[in-house]
Length: 383
Image 1 (cartoon, one colour):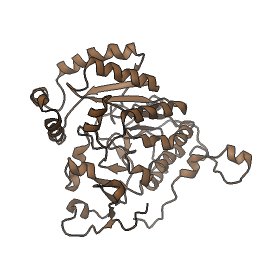
Image 2 (cartoon, rainbow, N blue to C red):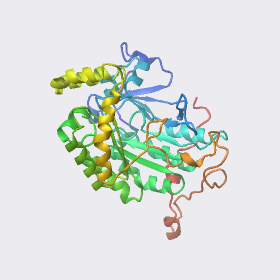
Image 3 (tube, one colour):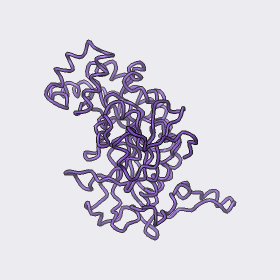
Image 4 (tube, rainbow, N blue to C red):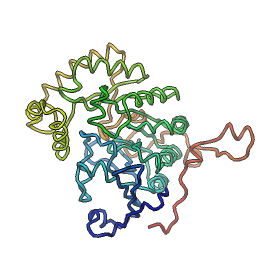
């Protein structure tokens, strides 16, 4: 990507000391199109992240092409991940975005290893892969193509309507591997949505994206996460939210109450004190004992929303217990977490694709977006 004349001198004194210690920082970029935001382009050494800890088979794998997120959701649970580079979990998380510019090329290399077991890979479980910058960096098409080309199931959870750009590619990918898509749409009050999620597309635009996914022949879950206590947990708000999700074509709905991890709690309460100070005493009481809303509140919320989900004929979706994203429809297909049984029929170790180029009608009919989007081979001297 070229942003001529916008490069910053990252070696200047006082410029992001955590980033300055990295040996893979290419440059830092600012542009008027993204006022107040700095993009720090790095050469990633790996693309696939194995989720640590106990898990059901197979183990969870994720890809995060970006760190930090311009959606600027006050409640975002991923905020603390920014502190590892001496960046704060508040304003820096919103405005200092790490971009792994070579992520698709590295992924292609990792997936080609004989040891890769074609485990489902989740995107959007940390920061959003379809945040605004994706419109310029265009990292996702190469990622999707690499996964499909190597027989690897994928799931995507996003607030970003840029997903619509890649729907033809995702539809083709779904003909070769399981592809599971979900839109995160938690707030159905326009004023509140713009206050607490100021960098996100509108609720209306996200619902239209759900419809576009369905028109491309794929299912689309809606994540009503998080439900904000005393703000979006009224029966009227929940009922209207489910009505709109159903009308848009949502295939299932998942919900959960707001949880406030250390590093997120202070930032969210700062927003709450500014926009809804009358709720501060109730929140301080509700979250006095930790990250999660008390069991009693969660039970109360379930008793309120479950009948509404049934009334709107919306199946309650399943969240992946390991990654926190939409549960991959491929999870039941593996015999064990070492990938002993191949998931899909493969030709020469991977699905077969045909690229366009002959100019004939037959070639046009067999045109493969996956083949066109596959990242190039890595030069052996890159690292």
